[in-house]
Image 1 (cartoon, rainbow over the protein chains, first blue to last red):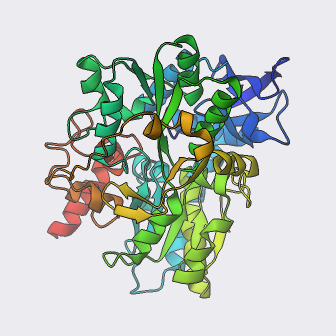
Image 2: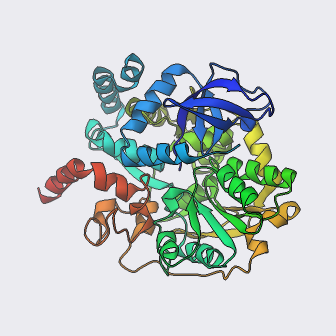
Image 3: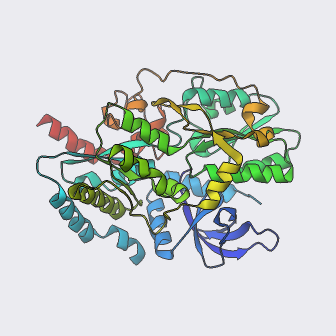
Length: 90
Length: 375
């Protein structure tokens, strides 16, 4: 639950300014970007996704390192990804 | 994988370890608390204690959100979940946490409608799709998670989803650190500050730790080299006779935190006068509740919550583990009666709990310690 998973912003929602499509480990998900206001996010930005919300922007190197660290978590990470895959926040 | 190597480089680790040893005053022992369960996990997984001189001890702190939930709150949540029209929703981590009368999993097996969700927004969606049911989200976590709960309540209010409420168990890290500093059990020399909580609250609020207690704090990242570098920064401060808040994790933690996240927490939630923490007891102004303006989304007002108080099982020493007074393997039931499959205490449930991290990765260090104590 406390895990933040890095993802890359793919596109912003045309209908809602607080939703973006983010690619997280190969899966595209709707993620709430309301907490990044007022700066917001744009396609190509990397963000740390925590329980459906982008918590902060990070650079690509940090994203790669975090992903590798998460992979090492084993079951906890697998559970988190599975939960994320089942999630639909729109 | 060049990005990763940057944070894992063995030569750099050795170089840092040598500098750490050089900074240690001969004959002096150092105790640093890593506040966050994520750090505990990294320390055990990479055997970082083996890279540190014997005189530097890392002590595990209370920063595991699942671990600090008292058993009575689990029982209260289950009491809510047993209403026939209720759908209780929860993060997966919470499902196996035992209350006095069993866990969410047990209650689910007995017929309560309890569903795992990834995000509070998933719970809100369930509420939208089930207008004839009352949907409750079991909200847990430190400042990292509280903004997400707050944003979801704001969304529910904006959309008028009145059958959605949160059972708010959000806690704040600073009063817990203060309680540990005030506790006579433990003499600490400094802190590794929690990385993800700090992305929200920033570094400034830790100022009282050097200011009032004269102890340094370094906000630390989660890679092995981050932790070694943070220990180095703490020792450097002590060697220079300084006590300050420093930020090692600048690539993620802004000094002022996330203003928007703080704003939404403040809009939806307020401090409770006091809250019970597992193992630490009642701590004043250490947790959040939903403000009056959002009462319709506050499960504690929507339902008659029994307010159960349950003493921790006698055999369980999670309290001492959470305060850093004992190491996980010093608990009498560690790895025998209490395992990740059949946890007695919360510290064994979450992957961020010190006991679970130790159980999964720590055995080499434990052998070393056992040898040392035999010798």
